[in-house]
Length: 577
Image 1: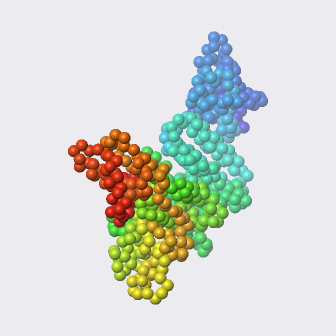
Image 2: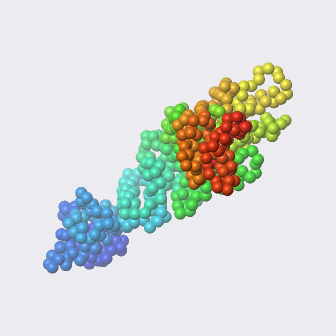
């Protein structure tokens, strides 16, 4: 206790052993000396006004001029407020501290006891940037590593563990205090809150992030090392394994991933790492993330199978039959990540992370099947790789079976290359889905059956979201029907939906004859695709007039042409141009 006694009895505080470590002015150290003397006498805290009056006199209120000393000591972390309503150091004025009680912190008392402070706490001030925040967090991980090492050394355990734990607790509290003082977003702290990571999950994340920054020997990536980092004993280790198992928040949330490898003893070990997108968002918060569209656009140039679609409209922009809309909303709820995580936890769903769904959209042409596929993709924030199945036979006569497999192989290759999860859209998939022939048949029939068998096999193995559109569900082969877990019917719009479609698609800035009534148009039984086509044909016709004007007569003429079947071969999918 020689450092303590030396400090308590010193007539010149600048000559004490601990002075150099305090980084304080002489008067600030005198405040600490007075608090230490009172502490030894049995008084844990003192009012600021009493401290200042004792040291600087109580006449003419000159002691008030020294209030800044208390604020500095609070910022340095040598004293702490003892109050039911402690103030934020950065916001409080000096005068507000006058009637506040303050006490010495544990870190200062330990300094007096040991004569040295291995851990120099940062001042309580706002973080300037995310790197300053990470510096404190990485120091925190070093203390977790030190505790883990002590726990593994039985002889040192009782001597050192409490000391390191105390330092860790002080640092964690200091980080919280600095975050509270910081007005701008601290990227990583915001990330933890968004992902709802608990204390142990944060430690695992920070340990892996430290490895990314240090590019060290990857010692912190191994599963057992990470578990040791956050575990107090063997029971804790068993319990904490769940944090790194499939179905955990870190894995299902696509925050971390792992590689499996054989260890020297013949077993399999896991090495964990942070997902690339997460690392980039933390390491380079100011750098705009490159959109996947550019990457996919480059990758797709090397193939001639798919059309890449970046959807513009989500499900709110599509006019659907109420039952169809209800089914789609249920589908969206079932594809929510939290729902998927529960299914993994219950053992219903085996694959972690990515969403899995095989969907058939069926109904008459023009009812919005393709448009809805795009809107579903937009709502899920996915791109679409679309393939027109009606071309399969004409494009690949003689080697259709081989090309069917190539569709799925190419899709998987593009997804892997771009590290994205696009939706695979098979438009007009009737040829693939129709009933297979059971008889011997000719060469063409056998080829068609073989093509369907391969298609069935590929659907069975498919991982991700696949949407197939078809006009007639009645003709679908039973084997295919079982492979699709969502079958959604698209009906022709009723009168109310037709009115919404007309209002949505009629040109806003175009001239209309006086008394033009949309209700007149809604009387005609038309699909969304037909309405879209009629409006476009009318627009081209009106645009050629010297005095362009949309009239009811022009619309009725185009509707009559459509009703007579002049455009039956058109299978337009969109509701919005």
